[in-house]
Image 1 (cartoon, rainbow, N blue to C red):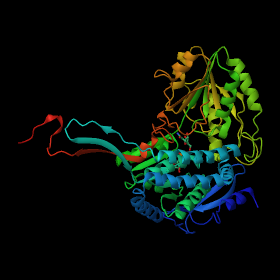
Image 2: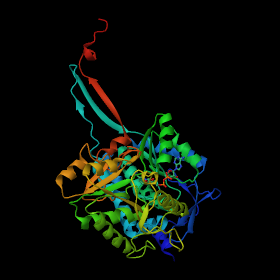
Image 3: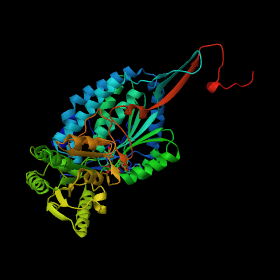
Image 4: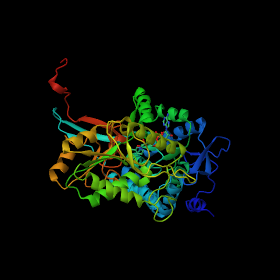
Length: 509
Ligand code: NAD
């Protein structure tokens, strides 16, 4: 039995090639629709097909989700948290198998696949605690015998659209907080990772059904932009949480904006590390290699630009080239492999096109730059001397290409780092407390995430995750991000016998 079939069997999935969508405890069971293929990017071979959600399935999912919401919103939040705690236990039991499935379907190394599942588990723990802390505030009324306060209510069914590169964790960031907030969740996963979505749905809904709460989490798998558009335009979904590229995110924002719905946008990054003259290079090299090469450069927080103080430039480049030469590329499930494949042939062509453009601009490839001649979608991690203003450097190429550039002053480095359309993650390596503090000051990095002596990728849950500018402004997974999944209501209660008006207005006698 293949690793893939073993993983599926252990996840309790009997037949992945039938049924594509689940609502309130049902699978569509149709086998007459179009198939969404799940491809193993390490081999390029199809591993399964999943029947996609039809327009009728979608309507049924939304109706069921609304119906489930009417009950769920009245379940006390700590009780909702208790159900999420049970999901956390189920995920702990399936961590190894689900981590393997992530590796098989999107090509992450096993440690990163398992790490994604751990992030889901962490999100359940966080959400359980949060379920007792959906705090509103009280205000002092200017009118006698009046009490003012605000409270937070559930919002409704939330549409969650996710990217391929975090096929399980990003859903968990949204779904578990939405669930404790009293919302139901309709998930449209990336059609490049349908099996991960089926597995997650099975694990979580099994728990919810056992506890008597079907229909809180539903799944709509499609590769049809028209159906995705329908979901985005559906005014029964008060919030669309979208994770993906800037062009698709822009379109989603415009469509949801037209109906005055809410969006939570988590879009592309173009993240930089600054290494100054005082930096600990041992730490910097490890963080840069993990940030630039990890997940084959397919993280939104991947390190794509590196600004090195001119006094450390050649030394750091030499060490990076040596470290890159140690990176074992191959089957992500094999021990000691550090870099798996890109997701598909289109990604390989984007990598190739980026290198052609770099060469036309006059960029010098210092390491890598080749597509590997083997089955699957493997490329070399690549280091290039470049200039920040080149259009190719200003864009996010979702591949392991690192642009290196020297600088002279910290002001110059911060200006360069900010000088791109995106604003997700950023980092400085420095032992100069002034440089570190300047970097995280209001005049420093303009990103949603700014780190000192830590790389750009590998954020922990608990902090609000997200970015500014073209990255979309959304914040998920930590801090007060729960507020995005609830509606705020201000209550003024008059317990007196008079009807005084605010601002001292007298109206009639
Ligand atoms: P993508 O934009 O191609 O797809 C994202 C999702 O949008 C998929 O589910 C896709 O099917 C869906 N989609 C496609 N057309 C749609 C439409 N018309 N309406 C609604 N949805 C539609 O992105 P991708 O290639 O899957 O993922 C990579 C991108 O995601 C990168 O740019 C990366 O930086 C970004 N990303 C951002 C974060 C973050 O938290 N900021 C996290 C992960 C990935």
